[in-house]
Image (cartoon, rainbow, N blue to C red; front, side, top):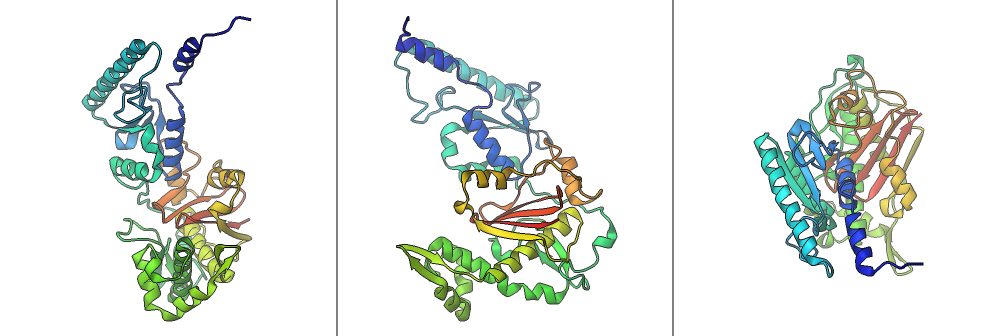
Length: 368
C-alpha cells in the first residue's frame, strides 16, 4: 500500500474546503432565522454570489473564513507550513476578488456587510450588529385584514373591548421598547388582573438568573427597582429560594406562571392569526431551555415549520407568509427584543404558540 505524504494530504484537505454552506455560514443562518429574518442564499445574479441576500432591504452579507479571506485576526494571520507561497497567493486573490465584489454591489445599489468566522464566537454581538446593518428588527407592522367579528372583544374572556393588552407584557422588556409592539383588545378587569402575575414572573426569572432575590444582585435595574418598591413581593421571592446539594433553586407558583403564559398565547393567536381563544388550552407546558436535551431543544426551535393549514386569509400570520423574502411556509421566530422575548405561532394540527422569555424559559400553549 502506498502512503500519502502529510504535506500532500494537507494540501488536498485545504483544497476540499467548501465555499458554500460552511460551518460559520450555517451558524449565522440559524442565528438570523431564529431572530425572524428571511433571506435568499448564494444569489448568482449578484457580484460575488453573496452568502445571504435580503432583497427587500437591498442588502447582502458575506460570511468569510478568517484564514481563506485574510482577516486581521489570530486565525487569519496563521501561515501554512507547507507550500506557503501558493496559499499566500491564493488568499491574496481571494481578498482582491472580495474587493471587486463589494465594488460591484455598491455600483448596483446594494449594501454589503461581512461577518467573520471569529466574530461568531459572540453570537449576541453579531446579531446586534447585523440587525443594525439591516435597518432594525425583523418585526414589522402588519395590518390585520381578517374577519372583523374576531377583533371587537376581550381576547381573554370575550367581554367588552375597553383597553389594550401588550404581548409581550411591558414588564418583560427593557427600554426603549420596540416600535409597533403588538396589542390586543382587552377588558379592564382582565388587563388589570394579570399585572401582579406578570410582575411575579418577571421578577422570578431575574432572581433565578441571578441566583438571589437581593435587588442589589439583580442585573436588570427595572426589575431590581420593582422588587424594592414591593416589600411583600421581595419577601415572597426570598422565601422561594433554597439550596439543594450545593445548588441554588427557586420554587414557584405554577398557576401564576401559567396565567401569564396563557395570557400571552391568547394575545398572540388573536393578533397574529386572528383566532381569539377564550376557552382553556388543551396543553400548557414550560421548562428552562437549559433543562432540555439537544433533541428536545432542536424540536422546540425548529419543529412545526410546515403548515398543514394556512392561517385565515387576511390575518397577520397569512400576510407574513406572503411578505417574507424566502421560505414561504414558515415565518419562524419573531424576536421582539433580543434576549428578552421571542415567539412563534402556527396553525398546524391546531393552534400553537411557542415563546422564550428572558432567554431562559421555553413555553408552549396549544389548542387542538
